[in-house]
Structure formats: structure tokens, C-alpha cells
Amino acid sequence: MTQTLDRADQAQPASVGLLWRVIPPGLYGGKASKLVERSAMVNRRAWFVLVGGAFEPMLFLWSLGLGFGQMVNSVAGPDGQPISYAAFVAPALLAASAMNGAVYDATFNVFFKFKYAKLYDAMLTTPMGPMDIAIGEISWALLRGGLYSAGFIAVMLGMGLVFSPWALLALPAALLVAFAFAAVGMAATTFMRSWQDFDLVQLAVLPMFLFSTTFYPLSVYPGWLQAVVSWTPLYHAVELMRGLTLGVVGWGMLGHVAYFAVLSAVGTVVAARRLGKLLLD
Image (cartoon, rainbow, N blue to C red):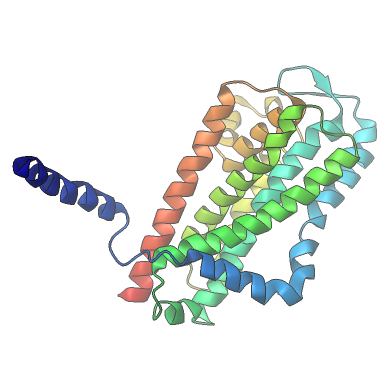
């Protein structure tokens, strides 16, 4: 029995050491929910700022899906069957809602708190660690992206643009997409030096919004550009949302889910380690 316990004691440090190579000691204090609570209290009087961002994709849907869509007979859906242009655009704008809500909260707001308000320096004097800050900020950005997505799904239901019970999974999928974009956005923010660097955010987000099969199918691109587009995060989000809302579901969906799961994990760890390096060194 004693030998068994000794072997267990010897094995435990190895596994713990492997864990802390990814999350070093002192990075996490289990207080991330406190940062989410603070963000909710701060934004309680600025609720119109949160809600206002949800209207942009709705305006795109009404102007392009219903306005311009009247001049388009049909578009090939994920399974090759013709669908209306509004049904084609709506799930793509749902994915864009999750992206926009998460990215802008995880970049502009985080940069201000980090560089100017010095909020995170004060937080590190409490039991919170850099991992708590990363998870808390990413979770708040996820909630904002989820709010945008939930409102957009309600509009789609009201307009009759949901065609399958699989659409029940569209909101959880949107939350996963928002989490991934928030994690990557916050990780990128830790490398920014001034407000001018946010031009790079627009340089990444705007082309993705326009060209990740949001408004027209992948087949309109030349072959080499199709390969480039198919690697972008928003393309995977759009394909996931289209499949769920149109009922075209297959095993390939798991590839999109895995893509965002890996993106979320990598972004969170990079953001936490960068914050730890910048704030603790």
C-alpha cells in the first residue's frame, strides 16, 4: 500500500507540471465571474450601446436580403438546392452578428482598460490573475455577441427564414463563434501599441464580412481564392449557421465546431499569457 501511494505521489507532480506549462501558477484564481459582474454593472446605464450594435446586421438583411434579393431569383444552398436570397444571406449575417459583437468588445474596450484606465493593474492586486481577466473579458464579449445573435434569430423567425428544427442549435453555435472571435481578438489586443493599430482590426474583419460567402456562394471565386476563403473563421461560422437554419446537417459540421473550439482555447491561453507577461514583468 505504501509503495502504491509513493508511486501516486510521484506521478502527480508530472501531470500537474504539464498542466502548468500551459497555465503557469498564479495565472488563475477562479474569480473570472467577478469581472463579468463588474462589466454588467458598468453597462447597466449604457444598455443602448449594447443593443444598438445588433441593428447593423438587421439593416443589411432588410436592405440586401429583402431589397436587393427581389432582383435575385434564387441561390444555391449548402446542398446545391436553390433557396431564396434572403434565406441565403440571413444565416451569414447571424454569424457576422456574433463576430462583430465579440470582436469589438474584446479589442476596443480591452485596450482602453489595459492602456489608459489601468484597470487590470488594480485587479492583479486582488486574488485575480491574468487568466481570470482573460476569461472574464472574453465571457463578457461572448455574452454581447450572444445578445446580438439572439436578437437576430428572433428577427429571422419573424420573417420566416428558419426552415429546420436544427436551428435550435444556432444560438449555442453562435456563442461558440463569439467565444472564438473574442479570444482571438483579446489575444491580438495584447500586441497593440496605439489606437492606430486598430486599423488592422478593420483590415481583418471587413474583408471577412464581405467575402466569406456572406453575400454570394464560394463558387463565384477562382480556385485559389476559394482555398483562401475556406480557411477564414467567418467562412466556417457562415457554413455552420447555414447548415443549421436550413436543415443541411452532416458530419462535416463537427469540423466547423472543432475549428472554433481550437481557436477559443488557443486565443484564451495566448491572451492570458500575454497579460501575465505585460502586467507582472
